[in-house]
Figure 1 (cartoon, rainbow, N blue to C red):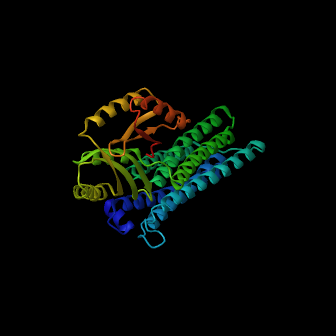
Figure 2: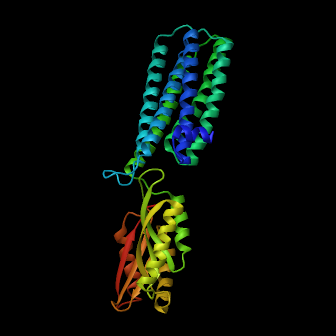
Length: 378
């Protein structure tokens, strides 16, 4: 399978080859299932089965779009796109969402027409077995595609896999409607078609929302940020780290920045050595181009130790203040610096600022207090 993926992908990138192989498999399987269902639906006059066949044809198209997007996304950076073309995969997911929504609307229109003007059904146990068999195949294909998409971080594959898996559950409803017709001689086929169209539409809206979020620039990955924080804090010489931002230029291309607290007694040469070493390691192991901002801290001064206890007491008493950092007692400038990270539920930042100043100013009456309030970006 890996060799086939490499052959189809034309390269040595495991992620690229996995997307190409899975997308190609989806195109072939969905085309076969689509042709079979449309034929069976036409012979039995079942709008539900025909609708499933049309939806499977759209699944083949979405798999093809995922394949094309993966191939275009691997283009090398150029002058107009210095960070590469990875976001093409997000455009692909957007196109897949549109295809899914169009298929859902077409299914809804056809089902409503059938409710208004019913047509006779011709259901056989053979046709139900065919639909049931394709449902099993679609479920296996959907689970495999979703797992591959999550493994290689491909939103388009996850979307295609989710749609395939939902189709399998919808096929079960089609079989149930056929059994009801055979046993009770009552057709709920059109109503099942309406329900199917709503399920497909809901899936399309979900994919659309995720694609738009990626294109607009959502928050950075919390899992990736957590790994980077662990890597940074493990570096000797770094006391603390905060204010990380991560910018995504594709599923496998990240840039970002982070502020690191370093003992003010360190020389510029010392700071350069371990930050440069850390920067190269982050790029090599996590594929993130990270820029560091340096914040001085006086961990060896008792004034700073006492000040931290005072600030921590204030932070612990306020539920919307998540943490504090960049705490520094600048003796020469007679100034205290501090940053608060707050959650998005806090609306009145100025009220928090006034409360903090009222709290700390009596303890340090002759000091200038500089407080920065911010939210997390990841």
